[in-house]
Image 1 (tube, rainbow, N blue to C red):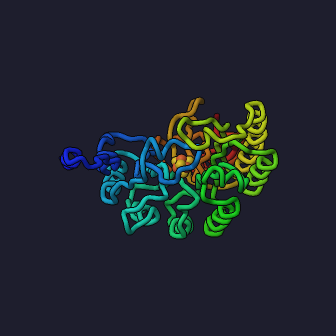
Image 2 (image 1 turned 90 degrees about the vertical axis):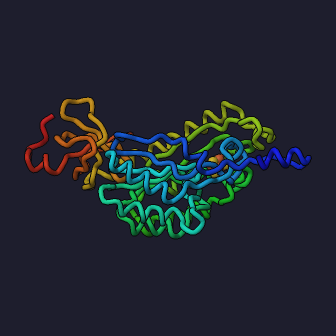
Image 3 (image 1 turned 45 degrees about the horizontal axis):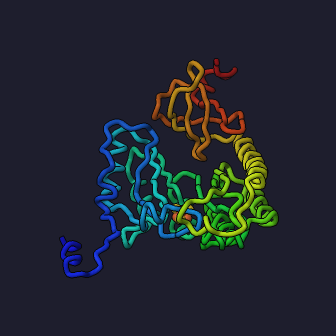
Length: 333
Ligand code: SF4
């Protein structure tokens, strides 16, 4: 009514704000949920990276209310969730005006039957000291951080309007590792952004070498209509992008395999998520978000203690402690 009245008076009458209730009110109520559940806490983005449509299509950053999130988390746990991943385009920008994501994580960690908390996707500029400290102090916050960087080259990061530098990104990871040395790191990369030279790409490869990602997503740049990057000069030829993507993925695959190999010998809790392909085999997730194959009597939703015994490029396998005690000569396959 207010907009109509303003239009009738000949005033500008455009309202691009979407009420928080309208954004999140459509989320369906859940009856029974998987052991690992997702909970949307934030939508939209104010960052305006020059290649991305999200700020135009999803609007400004909007945080869901604290009480509503806590209520839904309790409902998810009551419906069977043991792990909750908090979701948002810039999830670590979540705020209720006074509290940040780390406060929300701390509150959720008090839910008795909730065993694990994760969050994704994060922006480096919203990695507050509070959230970094939470990785060291909140046991239920899993040792995994997906923190996109997109490029290791400062000129390309500037052209992308990422508003962080290579060094500032690496310093954040140093601070996270200082409080949680075993953290598994994940990232997103774009190769072939307009103007990317071989030297820029070499900076991306050297950043990958410096970080040692446990897993990562990598893509060829693809122009999105209406974004500033789509009309930038110096678009990189497709065959150059292909070749760079192959080199980048080879490096990322190498590091993922190395991370998995380094976890052999670790004892950890595995959240059982589904049956495996073999009789008696189940599949679960380690704290570091690795897929873990194991033989077990445990049911979906159980947390079992596992010794990781073998590593592959995309998963690991392990022996459940209880099974190892029952079958000291080896677990029957
Ligand atoms: S890439 Fe991420 S941070 Fe950048 S504008 Fe898109 S959603 Fe926002």
